[in-house]
Length: 184
Image (spheres, helix red, strand yellow):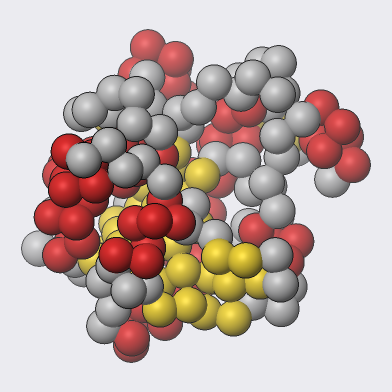
Protein backbone atom coordinates (compact mmCIF):
# COMPACT_ATOMS: atom_id res chain seq x y z
CA UNK A 1 0.00 0.00 0.00
CA UNK A 2 1.21 3.48 -0.83
CA UNK A 3 1.83 5.67 2.19
CA UNK A 4 0.81 8.93 0.50
CA UNK A 5 -1.05 10.12 -2.55
CA UNK A 6 -1.88 13.51 -3.98
CA UNK A 7 -5.13 14.81 -5.41
CA UNK A 8 -5.93 18.12 -7.07
CA UNK A 9 -9.50 19.37 -7.07
CA UNK A 10 -10.35 20.86 -10.46
CA UNK A 11 -14.06 21.17 -9.89
CA UNK A 12 -16.02 24.24 -9.23
CA UNK A 13 -17.86 26.48 -11.61
CA UNK A 14 -15.25 29.28 -11.60
CA UNK A 15 -18.22 31.65 -11.82
CA UNK A 16 -16.38 34.64 -10.33
CA UNK A 17 -13.41 34.07 -12.65
CA UNK A 18 -15.64 33.79 -15.72
CA UNK A 19 -13.61 30.87 -17.08
CA UNK A 20 -12.12 27.59 -15.88
CA UNK A 21 -9.52 28.52 -13.23
CA UNK A 22 -7.76 25.19 -13.66
CA UNK A 23 -6.85 26.10 -17.23
CA UNK A 24 -5.52 29.61 -16.57
CA UNK A 25 -2.14 30.05 -18.28
CA UNK A 26 0.88 30.35 -16.00
CA UNK A 27 4.56 30.25 -16.90
CA UNK A 28 4.17 28.17 -20.07
CA UNK A 29 1.68 25.78 -18.53
CA UNK A 30 -1.79 25.92 -17.00
CA UNK A 31 -2.58 26.32 -13.32
CA UNK A 32 -3.77 22.76 -12.72
CA UNK A 33 -0.65 21.28 -14.34
CA UNK A 34 1.59 23.43 -12.19
CA UNK A 35 -0.33 22.48 -9.04
CA UNK A 36 -0.29 18.80 -10.03
CA UNK A 37 3.47 18.90 -10.60
CA UNK A 38 4.02 20.25 -7.08
CA UNK A 39 1.59 17.78 -5.51
CA UNK A 40 3.29 14.87 -7.31
CA UNK A 41 6.71 16.07 -6.12
CA UNK A 42 5.45 16.04 -2.53
CA UNK A 43 3.21 12.97 -2.49
CA UNK A 44 4.82 10.76 -5.14
CA UNK A 45 1.74 10.62 -7.36
CA UNK A 46 -1.15 12.83 -8.39
CA UNK A 47 -4.70 12.42 -9.65
CA UNK A 48 -6.96 15.22 -10.76
CA UNK A 49 -10.49 15.07 -9.40
CA UNK A 50 -12.86 16.58 -11.93
CA UNK A 51 -14.42 16.13 -15.34
CA UNK A 52 -12.26 13.76 -17.41
CA UNK A 53 -13.57 15.27 -20.64
CA UNK A 54 -12.20 18.69 -19.59
CA UNK A 55 -8.79 17.58 -18.31
CA UNK A 56 -7.80 14.29 -19.98
CA UNK A 57 -5.88 16.21 -22.66
CA UNK A 58 -3.34 17.20 -20.00
CA UNK A 59 -2.04 13.63 -19.82
CA UNK A 60 -2.63 13.32 -16.07
CA UNK A 61 -4.84 10.75 -14.34
CA UNK A 62 -8.33 12.22 -13.93
CA UNK A 63 -11.18 10.81 -11.84
CA UNK A 64 -14.73 12.11 -11.96
CA UNK A 65 -16.55 12.80 -8.71
CA UNK A 66 -18.21 9.60 -7.52
CA UNK A 67 -21.00 11.72 -6.03
CA UNK A 68 -21.72 14.89 -7.97
CA UNK A 69 -22.86 18.31 -6.79
CA UNK A 70 -21.37 18.11 -3.29
CA UNK A 71 -18.60 20.62 -3.79
CA UNK A 72 -15.08 19.95 -2.50
CA UNK A 73 -16.25 17.37 0.01
CA UNK A 74 -17.35 15.23 -2.97
CA UNK A 75 -13.83 15.49 -4.37
CA UNK A 76 -12.37 14.43 -1.03
CA UNK A 77 -14.78 11.48 -0.90
CA UNK A 78 -13.69 10.44 -4.39
CA UNK A 79 -10.01 10.72 -3.46
CA UNK A 80 -10.45 8.58 -0.36
CA UNK A 81 -12.52 5.97 -2.23
CA UNK A 82 -10.22 5.57 -5.23
CA UNK A 83 -6.93 6.05 -3.39
CA UNK A 84 -4.92 3.33 -1.75
CA UNK A 85 -2.74 5.50 0.45
CA UNK A 86 -3.02 6.16 4.15
CA UNK A 87 -2.13 9.85 3.84
CA UNK A 88 -3.95 11.85 1.17
CA UNK A 89 -2.84 15.34 0.21
CA UNK A 90 -5.84 17.26 -1.12
CA UNK A 91 -5.18 20.57 -2.87
CA UNK A 92 -7.46 22.95 -4.75
CA UNK A 93 -6.10 23.87 -8.18
CA UNK A 94 -6.33 27.62 -7.62
CA UNK A 95 -3.37 28.29 -5.30
CA UNK A 96 -0.54 29.44 -7.59
CA UNK A 97 1.87 30.15 -4.71
CA UNK A 98 2.11 26.58 -3.43
CA UNK A 99 5.50 24.90 -3.42
CA UNK A 100 6.40 21.23 -3.31
CA UNK A 101 8.54 21.92 -0.25
CA UNK A 102 5.57 23.32 1.69
CA UNK A 103 3.41 20.35 0.64
CA UNK A 104 6.12 17.88 1.74
CA UNK A 105 6.29 19.63 5.13
CA UNK A 106 2.50 19.36 5.40
CA UNK A 107 2.59 15.62 4.66
CA UNK A 108 5.44 15.04 7.11
CA UNK A 109 3.61 16.96 9.83
CA UNK A 110 0.44 14.92 9.18
CA UNK A 111 2.32 11.63 9.52
CA UNK A 112 3.89 12.82 12.77
CA UNK A 113 0.57 14.04 14.17
CA UNK A 114 -1.30 10.83 13.42
CA UNK A 115 -4.49 12.88 13.17
CA UNK A 116 -7.25 12.01 10.71
CA UNK A 117 -6.76 15.48 9.24
CA UNK A 118 -4.03 18.11 9.33
CA UNK A 119 -4.99 21.58 8.09
CA UNK A 120 -2.77 24.63 7.60
CA UNK A 121 -3.80 27.64 9.66
CA UNK A 122 -2.99 31.27 8.89
CA UNK A 123 -4.24 34.52 10.38
CA UNK A 124 -7.17 34.28 7.95
CA UNK A 125 -8.22 30.86 9.26
CA UNK A 126 -8.04 27.18 8.38
CA UNK A 127 -7.41 25.95 4.83
CA UNK A 128 -9.14 22.57 4.35
CA UNK A 129 -8.54 22.67 0.58
CA UNK A 130 -4.80 22.30 1.09
CA UNK A 131 -4.72 19.64 3.76
CA UNK A 132 -3.85 16.03 4.50
CA UNK A 133 -6.62 13.52 5.18
CA UNK A 134 -5.97 10.03 6.52
CA UNK A 135 -7.95 7.26 4.88
CA UNK A 136 -9.77 6.65 8.17
CA UNK A 137 -11.61 9.96 7.55
CA UNK A 138 -13.63 8.26 4.79
CA UNK A 139 -16.51 7.28 7.08
CA UNK A 140 -16.96 10.82 8.39
CA UNK A 141 -16.82 12.21 4.84
CA UNK A 142 -19.44 9.70 3.64
CA UNK A 143 -21.67 10.54 6.62
CA UNK A 144 -21.38 14.27 5.97
CA UNK A 145 -22.43 13.77 2.35
CA UNK A 146 -25.27 11.46 3.34
CA UNK A 147 -26.58 14.14 5.71
CA UNK A 148 -26.00 16.92 3.13
CA UNK A 149 -23.40 18.67 5.29
CA UNK A 150 -21.12 19.85 2.48
CA UNK A 151 -19.06 22.51 4.27
CA UNK A 152 -15.41 21.53 4.58
CA UNK A 153 -15.01 23.57 7.77
CA UNK A 154 -17.80 21.55 9.39
CA UNK A 155 -16.06 18.33 8.33
CA UNK A 156 -12.71 19.28 9.82
CA UNK A 157 -14.47 20.01 13.12
CA UNK A 158 -16.00 16.53 13.08
CA UNK A 159 -12.59 15.05 12.28
CA UNK A 160 -11.06 17.02 15.16
CA UNK A 161 -8.41 18.19 12.72
CA UNK A 162 -5.08 19.33 13.96
CA UNK A 163 -3.82 22.61 12.61
CA UNK A 164 -0.38 23.52 11.35
CA UNK A 165 0.46 27.20 11.92
CA UNK A 166 1.71 28.83 8.72
CA UNK A 167 3.25 32.28 8.81
CA UNK A 168 3.81 32.65 5.04
CA UNK A 169 0.27 33.09 3.75
CA UNK A 170 1.04 33.63 0.05
CA UNK A 171 1.31 29.85 -0.42
CA UNK A 172 -2.33 29.39 0.51
CA UNK A 173 -3.88 32.34 -1.30
CA UNK A 174 -6.30 31.25 -3.97
CA UNK A 175 -7.48 33.15 -7.01
CA UNK A 176 -11.19 33.53 -7.64
CA UNK A 177 -11.52 36.63 -9.81
CA UNK A 178 -9.72 38.16 -12.79
CA UNK A 179 -8.54 40.97 -10.49
CA UNK A 180 -6.99 38.48 -8.02
CA UNK A 181 -5.36 36.62 -10.91
CA UNK A 182 -3.89 39.86 -12.25
CA UNK A 183 -2.55 40.87 -8.82
CA UNK A 184 -0.54 37.73 -8.15
